[in-house]
Amino acid sequence: MLRRGLGVADVVRRSVDLRRHAPAVTDPLLGKSLSYRELWSRSGRLAAALVRRGVAPGDLVVVDSARSTDLVVAMLGILRAGAAYLPLDTRAPAGRVAEILDDVRVKVAVSDGRPDSVLAAVAPHLDVLAAEQPPPAGKVLLPDAGGDDPAYALFTSGSTGRPKGVLVPHRAVLRLAVAARFCTVEPGDRVAQLSSPAFDATTFEVWNTLVNGGEVVLLPSVAELAMDEWVALVRRERITAMFLTTSLFHALAREVPDACSSLATVVVGGEQLELPAVRRVLAAGPPGRLVNGYGPTETTTFAAYFDCTGESVAGLERVPVGYPLQETELYVLDEGLRPVAAGEVGELCVGGAGVALGYVGRPELTAERFVADPDGGPGLYRTGDLARQLPSGALEVLGRRDRQVKLRGFRIELPEIELAATATGLVDAAFVEKEGEGPSAVLAGYVLPAPGTDAAALPGELATRLAGRLPSYMLPPRWQVLARIPFGATGKVDRAALASAVVAAPVDAGPAGPLESELLELCRQVLGGRAAHAGDNFLDAGGNSLGATQLASRISRVFGVRVRPAEILLAATMGELATRVENLRTEKGGAAREFPAENRR
Image (cartoon, rainbow, N blue to C red; front, side, top):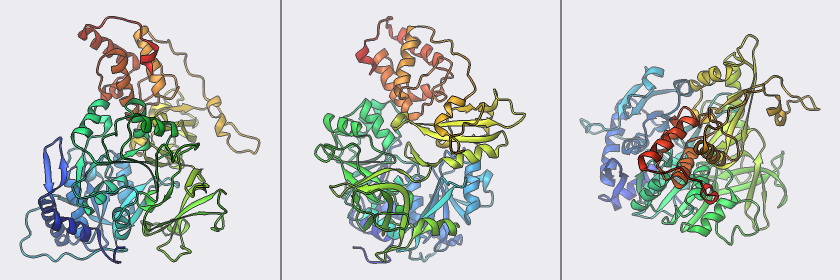
């Protein structure tokens, strides 16, 4: 057990003392690396600069940086200044960033100076520093921070149409990182850093590594490389441990099931883990440990874990979320927050040192979701997930009490998208549902036009308006226009009947030739059975970056040519993509041929 009040930087300092010249953060593609001594020195200079700018304990400091060595310097430097960091999603539109900054009182930001940063436009009042700072002129006393002091804030989707900031203390980060049951990191281990700075998996990737003397290795997303190149990079960089979103794991399981065989530990999380994908990886060449990790942002990345082995998943119908992490308690409670009997369904509540402090500036919502811990701990967080205890003692999550969903690792409140759509004035009503699971999952949007709105132009206009308000992962790839709102027997909207109430669309002309036809079939498989038409682009058809990676892999296998995922995402239509594939085959000297059925899967 850690003594109460210890801070994250205090524990990282132990690694610095023991491993001064060992690498702490490495960017292999850029050839950049910081030793523990260099990381400590640079973060100290930044901390001194922040204190001199008036940053005080408990303040929030914005971090506007892509994944880089500078990002890690900024995170550690802010903690050493006694403050808490607020990382922004570098891909978020200006409207989303402005909305977040309106909710918090910040006066200083640390930025990597990217030319596409929206920070200057939405918050010109901020005092912006670079992560690289010169040595201070004279000694600067850095304050202590730890225990219940805030370490960072992350903003997640909000059911009221407004994002909410989760405030996480030092003791919660250290509960995740020290003596971790779900993933052991030892001195010298190389842990991949793949997540967006605004995604809570970064907490695991950075702090579990640095607290234990490992090396943070910055790797590109699998969507940035061909899948086989990405797997080769992971192996070449001798990665020891890695977090994968469930969607990415599912894609790897389908395309390269032995992709993780060189790793000691792979932790998967974000959505329900598919049992067939787990079994395929276990059969093809698993990592040393394959762990299903579960936990909302409010419980500091993970609250439960389950080791997936052939024995542990035998006879199961779904993968459990498992058992509590260290210094964590899990409860299955009824509506009155009383324990239910083993095997009965109730709401999963989390207690222990990993529970967050609450929501930034949202006392009513904090009181609703963070309640008293019967064991006298920091408090319980009501996850809103329905769960039950299996005979083995492991917990199984069955779904949501509300309408929050997980998509490609992101937590999304569907009402937020609906409210944003109606706020445009273009529609009288909007309905958003998640369709499918795993890599083929997609948001489906349905709207009833407002009087005077051109129904034909509505989907494009609505998508354009929302792109400035919501991040890309919250945008349905296609909005379908309703002729009417279907109601059920109780008078409520019949969401299951929405598709049947859509205005009829023009009939697609069909594929132009055998190659295009085969390409559309590959696309249909990647999209989980949804048809794609020659006039669609991949995104309109319901695709995403992970699906593009899968499709690129299948194009390589079936047609014998290499297409980058980015080309699939940027192609105006599937017909244009088919032309690109045909041209590549011609350049390569490939003749037209029949495509064997076994190559299509």
